[in-house]
Amino acid sequence: MNLELFLFYAFAALAIGSSLLVVSLKNPARALFLFFITLFAMAGLFLFALADFVAITQIMVYVGGVLILMIFAFMLSNKELLADIQHISGSFLSLPSWQSILLALGFFAVFILGIREWNNDMPEWMLSNIQEGMVITPHDNNIQQLGIKFMTQYVLPFEVISIFLLMALIGAAHLSRKEESQ
Image (cartoon, rainbow, N blue to C red; front, top):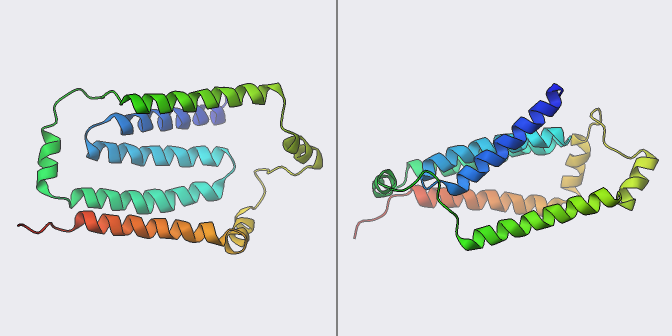
């Protein structure tokens, strides 16, 4: 096994393991830090998919922006919430509700169906691109092309992402403000 394959499996195991713990933990502080690890592992997987721009954006936007705002909002929240978290009793992992299990089984079934279909034959559009030599190689510079696409063809989704970041900032500010006593 070469180093690249080992790193891919390490990033995949880290992403899957930490994301399962994020949804299973009752302590939000631990879940936030595990979410931090999940986002970094996903950025590593994006690098293996030759999506270097997406990996850098993942780190800058989600890890550097949204997640840090969530951590600050959690740290600045009221002390009663923090006291309740310290007194949580129960196991380290909790079982999800039946809706979550059904949803996970549905995603798993779609995943297995996709693998079975993929093993039968490769899609026609992919075969034609391979024959024409239109595949991404590690030496291609796709960041400039992505910048041009973002400012022309995909300007609306780009602006929707900026609205999402603004909503995350407003939510973090709302959570961090002090409640008025009544």
